[in-house]
Image 1 (cartoon, protein in one colour):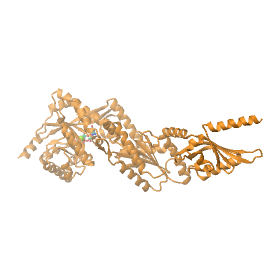
Image 2 (spheres, protein in one colour):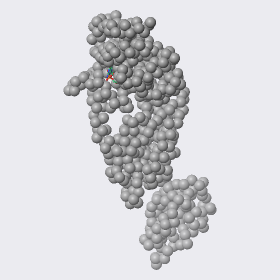
Image 3 (cartoon, helix red, strand yellow):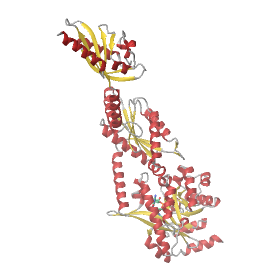
Image 4 (spheres, rainbow, N blue to C red):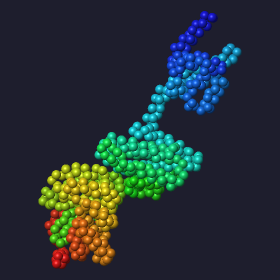
Length: 575
Ligand code: C2E
Ligand code: MG
Ligand code: MG
């Protein structure tokens, strides 16, 4: 019996000494009476330093008092406690241990010792955290991902419900991020996304969440919205910070963002619906000109559906080659010489017949699709110029460029690449028409683009001139050679003295600045006669020819003769 007890004691001593688990034994007053080598290794203390001390010396200070109260209650009641606890090493470093504490009593049930056994599970903890990080966070920016956002939205929604508060879901999409990626490489793109993430986080209040859904799409989840104006201020600040320049290795870029907002209440309490509505509102913000925010408007939902379906249809139209270019001649009314043609897009719709741009361009001119369409138009026009050239017809061809297309960062390089595909078509025969209103939006940027195109030999015309209220200074700064007087002034030229005055004014302006002027919308011979008297020779309009398929143009050119009235007016004018 005794021998067995001795053997057991030896065994226990050996376990105590060699165990990988840390073991600390305290007396009934909870003073340490022994600590095994593993426990000393883990805590970093020497045996002498711990003997006689309270194990509280290991505590990290990271648990609330209630944690220890519960623990001691379990030990006293059940004689046992087990759980995870964070402690601190002598070096100050925290570590998480799996700890079990047992009470050792004598035969009569009197408490004698406490035995604590523990192992360091920090690495397990870290591993688990890393896994969680991967599952819930976006690898590039470290922001919460869609999964975590869903979690947070659920929490936010129930919080809002309990507290009677309002939350806002803001869907943010960068404007023109794709071209940055295309032109500067993915690394630069990544760098910008990281910076955007940083700026977004900086602007949020504590408790709010910014998540990245992927690509250039982010979501801001804001709790406890006190007022719409507070929210608007916040978003205005977000837009402003996003618009600050981004420094890349070799250049600086400016980007904008469009934000769509859905708030609950009054909007749905379904997380998915809220997010979808915010997405739709973001789309509306892009449609109305980018670099802005828009609130979800239920009545817009139907409109968005229509626009979406037109966009899809146009995509199909592009793929199935249902788009056409028609050409409308410009002539010199004084000499009868052909001055060029303007390419105008048409859609040969399988059911609706031939559609003019007003039926479909508005649905896409603020969307990415305008790039595809614009590129198609340019390529098509150049292809036609090459074909005409082979027939011996060399004409100046004007192509309309949408504002968005012009301001895309890769506009000039992609035009250059396209021109290189048509080496036999002189760039100087290509003219680009931009709306005066679009040119004025960002006059510095536009002037720069125009100058770069001029280096390629490509000319510009300011379209619908007179509608944008260009000041003289603006006009001087815009290096466009040609101005096209908007047809709204020409139409009533014969009857409306104001329109006559405006037209005269524009003609005076173009003379002073030595620009070429073209009158648009010349519908009758009388219009032309009057314009000639005013000194405007170049004209385009139904009175000369309607836009026509390319194939009809050679025959039209062969047979066209200017009306005798114009010859006469020309004579009168020159006298
Ligand atoms: P715009 O560039 O000012 O083109 C002139 C428009 O006036 C054309 O309309 C033309 O058919 C019309 N027009 C010409 N002469 C007369 C006339 O005597 N009377 C009247 N009432 N109208 C006349 P269209 O082809 O419907 O084009 C409308 C607008 O759509 C164009 O205005 C242009 O801003 C845009 N557009 C046309 N093609 C393209 C394109 O390929 N790309 C882009 N981005 N926009 C285009
Ligand atoms: Mg035009
Ligand atoms: Mg026009």
